[in-house]
Image (cartoon, rainbow, N blue to C red; front, side, top):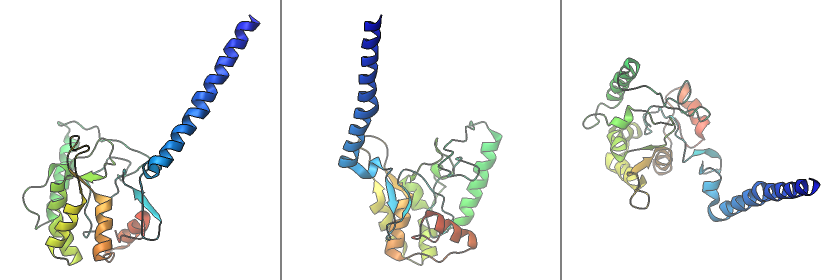
Length: 214
């Protein structure tokens, strides 16, 4: 019996060392060596080196000079990285219908010069509530508002959007998309930061970093 227990104990110790120490440290070391940015959360920094967000986590933007993401059901006010969630509302939900109608009215009011109907992803939430991307069509739809708020020719803003379009992974998986945080940062670097329009916008700017006046 003692012999069997010793074998079991040795097996347990070796397994714990291999799976609890050697394996995780090896994988962590390789990740830091080969792609440290992704391993550390794909963090985004401003020109002063301060972390202002992650490429993987969507943020809310309300200032008219910034492109806005799709609605978020993550947390009470949306875009809460600690409460990732979808709305879980079905297509027959009256609450969902009312929310979409309200968002459509708001978007049309805020974007009077936008071309065509509102793209679907601007009124639908993602499964996580934190999707950082929009379709190129949804970004370009907002272009007149952003260009007007910045006092910049629409062609220059369009060029920035087109430069920010990410293609399909491996040229096969997914759809072309635009990371809105990176796009808004690119706009600030190219055209400068817009002036805050309210105390709320100033607070949001401080929350995402000093590169935006959101």
